[in-house]
Amino acid sequence: MYNVLPACVYIWLCLLVELSLYEAVLQRPNIIFSANYAIYLTGEAVSLECQATADFTIHGYKFFKNNQEVHRVEAARLNKYKIRPARRNDAGSYTCLYWTLDTIRGRQESEISYPVSLSVIDQPSMPTLLIRPKESLYVEGEMVTLECEHPSVNAQITYRFYKDKSNLLPYQDTSISEHHISSLSTKDSGTYDCEYLIFGHQRIISSGRSKQQTITVTAWSTSPILKFLPYFSTFINGENVTMECEAPSPVYVTMYRFYKEEIELKEPSLNKGIFSLHNLTKANQAEYTCMYWSSMSNREIPSTQSLPKEIYVIDPLRPPFLFSDPPSGRIWDGGNVTLYCRAPEVYERTTFHFLKNRDEIISVSTYKQLSAALTVNMKKSNSTSSTKYICQYTAEIKGRSLLSPKSTEVEIMVVAPGSLLWLIAIGVGAGIAVLIVIVGLLYWALLPMKDKEKEAEESKPIHEGGCKVTSL
Image 1 (cartoon, rainbow, N blue to C red):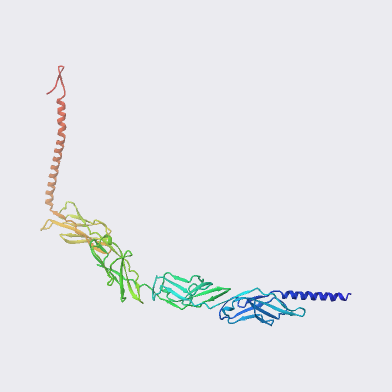
Image 2 (cartoon, rainbow, N blue to C red):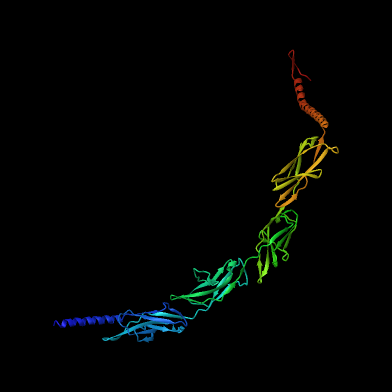
């Protein structure tokens, strides 16, 4: 009996081992794509792999498409099913199983794996890069839109735009098929293309690059020079000015434009670049610029604006005031007289001109001064005893020198010393006469008051011997 017991234990252990093997056969395998993605292009090779976790010998594999067996292999190591080249009808749900053989139960098959889906699509259509607006030449500051156009695709798509074979957006892709350049510069000149990318099942499929398109950007033409004829910028009410827009040579100009404070002036001479203003008023006072257009690659290319020039309109200058010290204008022979020339307002630079008998004797330049003075030593001339003086001024206003009208004349009389005593005597006599007149006026003013006092005294009652006497 003791010899039978070890045999029973041995048989029981063998049954347990066989049972474990049987249970292992029932474990389902995994089916995977060797390339780790499940979306393929037509013409590509597809490889499916059936992976088992058993530690015992596997004798074969079966592969199924949509639950229909499509491949069987009688080899332990040939656990792959290959489709080459892939076609659209190869798409579907794929599964697999494996089997083994043992001496007790014979052939045993595993459970079927969980399915994987194979997608087969055509090679994406090559896109077309559209540029709007389409020009042979662009000017700095203009805007263009790049659009990557292609047939509709039912999948997640992103876009890439390239300039000179470099990605315009190297750190991101965009889901929008358009790329805007809002303000072109010469640095944007180059060749452009695009592609779109299809995402799915851990794979990114590129459409391939579109045909290249060229964008050429030019800078604005060199700015012109705005000239005034006459050349100055300060004008008097009623004067005329002609503005000339001068383009750099040898540019062929097709059109000119003039602007007042950025507002276009109408009806300019488009061919000659000349614009005239007549009878200037304060309303014409402003800054003016001009531009020109030249033809290049069948486009009209504008220039940058000229430097602004100001038109400053003023009223005509008023004459100065001339007065002397002494104010009487009479001075004895050999004495000094001081003449004062005063402008009606202060200018940046003013030059005062003193004239004697219409001939200039001296000019005095000042900076922001209202007046100037001239002291003259007077000597009696045999031919005449008086000299006439006038003055005027030159005002510098914003680069233009303007000469004022002349002042009124001041006459200086030179008197001999003897004549001076005579003048003093006349002055004393005149003073006495004035004093007499003043006394007479005072007397005339006080006379009515004396008459009233006399009448009051006569009307008083007189008492004599106790009787009241009233004068008649």
